[in-house]
Image 1 (spheres, helix red, strand yellow):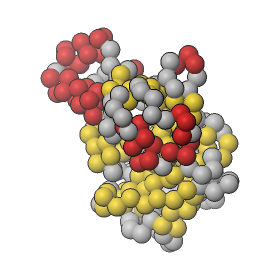
Image 2: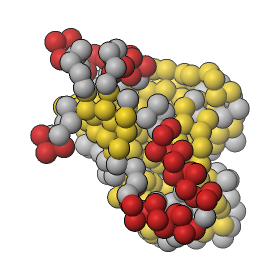
Image 3: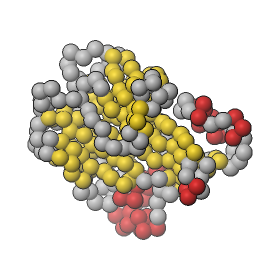
Image 4: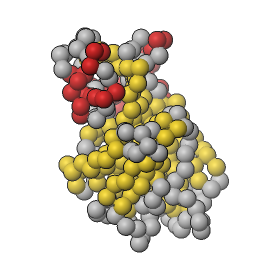
Length: 278
């Protein structure tokens, strides 16, 4: 399996100028994500005080374990935060790691949102693509007669979001909202409600419409080898039992035929949602 599209000569030269650590991370990113699609946003604190500055890291890996990746402008279309005052793009410098710093401007809920650019994968070995489909619970999306032909070309992108709470939420405020990501997980249970039950409800949208039958997985950072799984119902909703406190990562993947202009057979989108249960 080979991956392309993660770097270009200009960014590589810039990271060389900025130091060997940046080059090493870029190489790790290019070599590692082919086997580890999961991507998530992880702020240093999920419940900062209003006015606090919070380092924000971007991670790629598996099972909520991964490597922090630097701020690379060619890797995303948008990377911003939103709060009661509106939305604001992060103003990081190429190669920054942590990738951004969040300055909480107002009390209440804060969202960090990232929409990536597109990356390409090429599957050359027999059974490799089928293993990927089974692992991500999307094998039902590829007809049997379309499997087994090599190579398989896939293009993919990421839709990541993180939920934070600065101080107290506004009375009656919804725990989450949609930001127009093409594949988006939306929390319908407030993770910051101290009296919350273990049941966590989430809705999955694909291009603004509920996505039924999609596998939704969840990991707790303190017990990342334990993977919780469920599937969305006809309304795109899923219920997970989050049986411990701490930082959580919720993931979903969708696969569909790629547009002809991409030169790939398949396109996948990867949604992630991070938050903390107090």
